[in-house]
Image (tube, rainbow, N blue to C red; front, side, top):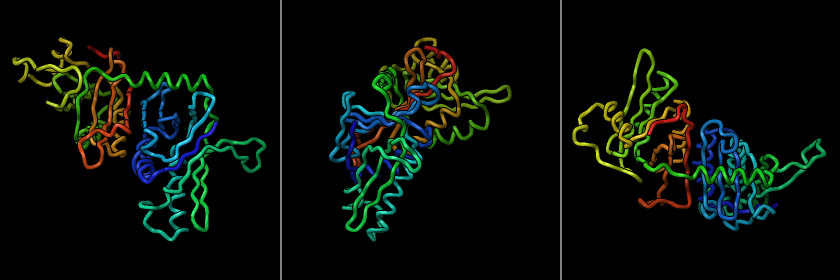
Length: 326
């Protein structure tokens, strides 16, 4: 199997400054899945333990001269340590800048135009067994910089098929999604919630309401975001219920089938908010069918526009601690 490509300026910026810091917060190790058209970072899709996180890029969003081949339908997957990947990328940029006399990092006609990334096998010191690496290499006029990131043995054909199947299942969208444009409000509330308890009740209505509540024997803390934009199935709040308390209104909506409620870990919910490091433009929340999971979809716009950037996607699936209600 072979993989070789050149990172673009945009690709270096997306990974080094935005997505790798965010993904590292989700978990130090993940699977990197390379196909003919996409580069995908996957957390917890095979073990099903904890928050699942999927970041997917069309190859053009990160690379030029993208070449991949394998006997498994040109698909390659392996586990990688994100902190080592991030450190190697930053190191090769910094060293190249020092060698070339540039102090502007990357940009313009800089390091990324010659920053090659490829899969190699090398014999480590004091070892008889070749080891796979993801290697960064850039060549200046008088020097070359190489950074090797150790990776796992590439997944077998059956494991890649299992990973692909899990990825396809994880792409299913909830029937109702509500948009939360201001992530800072959610972050502030979660910071307070972490001091109260470990379990969070999340309710989403077809009216565009997101209701969060955490309860203990001593205290109940809640927050409600109303009249949010809705994608998918939606309906109007019955006239007689508009002035009810959030809890009563949500309970009636659940009984009527206009809302769903699930319970998730506060730690998982807080972890999913770390995706703000990738600088999404907005986020959507939804509950999967039968309350299977809480889904958070982060959306990115084409710079300078309000149009969705279809070359990038990022979403999380939080495991629920009860079967949910519909």
